[in-house]
Image (cartoon, rainbow, N blue to C red; front, top):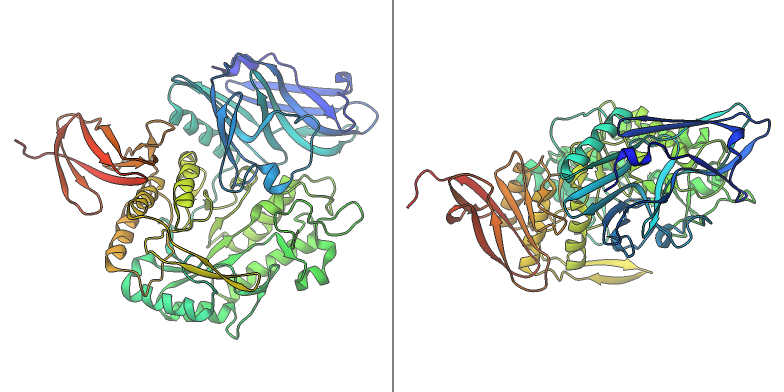
Length: 592
């Protein structure tokens, strides 16, 4: 497999916007390896400006057999990729980055596979992890097919003026037989460049979210569930006031109800629980007051008009993080929510829009990464000292060091497509938990509840189709994630049995499982005496589970505490289709 030394003597290339390759004599290129990490800087030493499309850290053939398996991240949270060097599978319900966001065409992409931020290669028991360990200015991406590979910094056609220098993002190349160790090394390298946001609490937040149990949200539902939380399960602590209460996306201080956000937060606290807030800071609806009054704060097309060209939802355009007026507005929203509403928990949603290379910005010397980070930092300056920040639908690497927690899966709904699909998305990202941020696997849904929402003005029903076994899979998934626990059920109706399950989940938070393989059948913990088991198949499967412990071991069901027996070395467990199980291991005090 590839290791760092393979790249030591490889030349850096500069590709210009006009499609040509720059004359190396026009630039001073410093290519410096420090063990497994590379830093590159370029300086324009010619007398003329150069408009640069991308910097190529490596392009060429490598000894990568066609059967080599890969995993790569997407540009945004909702895209992930896996496969081999010839075939790619998109993980996630929204398709590839190109399909979802219609990212600008690049003539060098061709028919190559494209992943962002990291590329893990696996052949047999050997792994190579190629990844960018920083993201302050440029997006890093990997192109590959068969045994051809490119490692590229997207410089977004910016101009490098005479005498000006750019520092590229740090590239790390780790190799070895233990994949978890490689990701630990990557996390350490990232944290050197982007220290995690200072924690404001020792505990992982827990709470309740309206999105998966209330069709049309009204403040009365917040209060009703707050009262039920205080009475029935106070351990959850917090009502996350989610999307749907403000008048229009962009107008985050205007509500559709007599009770505005400050009143709603006060009434939630009066019920005896905490209130958490919601904002999608970078999206602006064409019908919003913000759009009408401050079009100059928005990302523009070549004609100077607000653009929605890359937006998945065409009712939206994008707030420009480089514009001082836009940043002042973001700070104003955060001050209102923090000071006037008393919020100390903020869910910031649809963050990927702030980092889209969508058009012209107020400061045309800034990249989309810089624009995003400028907007985020402006908000954090108002709230980060004493508030918890959850990023959602975020561009992962541009968000490094800017959030306490990050959503790492798609939305959950009560069907197998989402219960199984979200688990697959999450388990590839378990390594991030408690290293880059706290992972948020979205809400826990335990009740068989149908949701009716308005779609184009008409009621639309989203029925629950999960079987009991699939609910068990979902429960085990939450334990294996180790991250946040937010209930998505009506707290005034949820059964006592499911309240007990939520309490067990909260007691097991903190550590993410490490899986025996990418089949994600068996997940283990270093600190918890638990094993999580998952049958993804459409039929019953018998698992032979190595216990990896000496002596006789008592095995019990985590949820019911029913003892399954005393075993040595391994245990056989029959798993129904689409089912999950969590077992607890203890040294047997006596056995026969």
